Every structure is written in C-alpha cells, then in structure tokens.
Length: 158
Image (cartoon, rainbow, N blue to C red; front, side):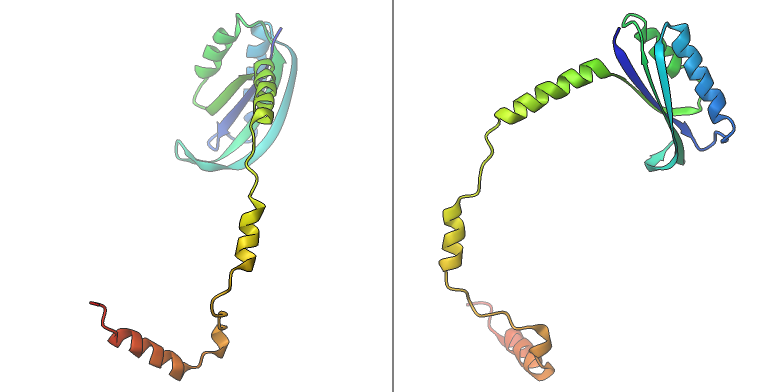
C-alpha cells in the first residue's frame, strides 16, 4: 500500500484545546478508510507567510499513514468537506514524491553546468584600472561645491 502524508493547517479561530479534538477526528477518518501506520506530528502554532481567510497564525499538523490508493479520493473528499476549522491542507503520495525526486536528481546530474571562463578573469586583472576611487571622507565641501557648479554649468546640448 502506498504511503501518504497529510499536512493541514488549522485557523487561529480554533482554540488550543480544540486542536486535539480535530486531530482525533482526522485520525478517525484515516482509520475509517482503512489507513494504517498512522503517525501524527503536531508542529504547533506558527505565523503564516501570508494571511489566509483573514488569519495570520495557524496550527500545523502532519499525519503520515498508509492507505489503499482506491480509497484516497474518498478520504480527500472527507477532509475537504470538514468544517471550516481546516483552512489549508495538502495530501501527498510519498512513494510517488520520492520516485519523482530520484528522477529529478538523475536529470540534474546529466545537466552540463557552465563554468566561468578563466581567461575573462585574467583579462580583467591585466586591464589598467581607471582612477582610484576617492574615499568620501577625503573630499572637502568646497571642492564638492565646485564640481557641482561645473556640472550644472556644462552645456549638455553638444
């Protein structure tokens, strides 16, 4: 049987004492649909990256389990129809995910990476540097005013 991971997010409107009740309800759903090897991890209350349904904080819960692939759609529908306490959830087939990750690693290893050309670095070091930059502390106010006036009076229509 395939292994699945369900991560769901409870909104801030859910009281802390209600989190175990909802968690038990989700575990009951898993058991009702023939799920086994149920492992639940409470990640706690955290700030969301962006507001969801006017909620800025949420309680994260991750449930790992194995279930027959034919029943997963019904389970998904049951979680989706859960009351509004679950504001987001994600159900992932871990077997497919690990398989896809392995294929991606193989594909990435075949990609030829471009290395920087060492000749370009040598050309830069051989080129003559322009005027050395003057630190700002060494420019006095009078010299700066003169440079600004010269720039302002310069004819730009040339």
